[in-house]
Amino acid sequence: MDNSAHQTVSDALRMELETLAGQDGPRVQRIEVEGRVFWIKRVEQLGLRYRLQKGDPRKAFERERLAYREMNAAQAPVPQVVAEGADFLVLPDCGLDLRRLLEREDDLAKRTRMLVDASVMLAEFHNLGFAHGRPSPKDMCQVDGRMQLLDFERYKHANNTPVGQARDLVVFAFNVAAHSPQMRGDLQEAMAAYRENSDTAVWPLAQRWCRWLRWTAWVTKPLQKRPEGRALEFKAIPVVMDLFLSEDKPLV
Image 1 (tube, rainbow, N blue to C red):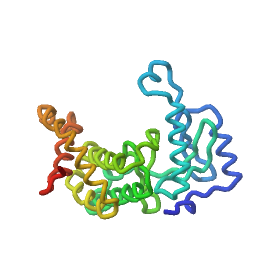
Image 2: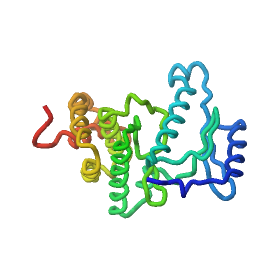
Image 3: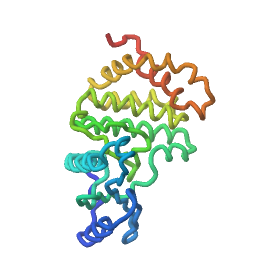
Image 4: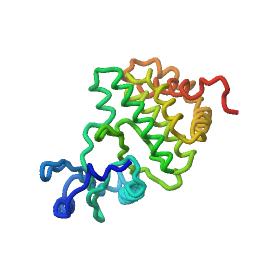
């Protein structure tokens, strides 16, 4: 997927963006230059307590910067970095994330199409040899009618395997079921679209991972009975288990 035409900037604009990004500011900052919107992502500044909880923010930043470099070079379905420095990345605005798009779209057919397109995009991303780490509709956007992936602070080369991609697929389905519950009924079609466009090794590995995690559906049954707003993630667990483990010929 060649997205350079949408995101090309002039040298003068790039220099201006680099100057703005090099100034002090919040970790994530929206800026508008020459009528275009960009986002600056800086290294997060954390105190000792949060560093112990969240890890080294410099390492997370470097993981994301490495991810964009490798993925842009491979023309993966991700935003094209327009400027970068030792402590910042500048990315083009990609509009609303997929979770918000699904919430705001009243047309059921259009919502289903967006979810299916996201699944196909994830398959294309995996086919290039990458894994995201924790894909979710909030990490996806639609640019010029094409889905893209965002946020790669969990990117690791060690995950760029069919096993890592299978984990991506299960996590993506879980995040849809948990945080976009209106789309649960469309997940089967979305997973079918993924399978049609992906390496055939990924689905059986995703099934195997769900078999290992099947106990979570049993232990959380009391919590699944809570009202929807208080138990979305617990209620998503049996949805995902059924999605991956309902076939007539289970993986052995």
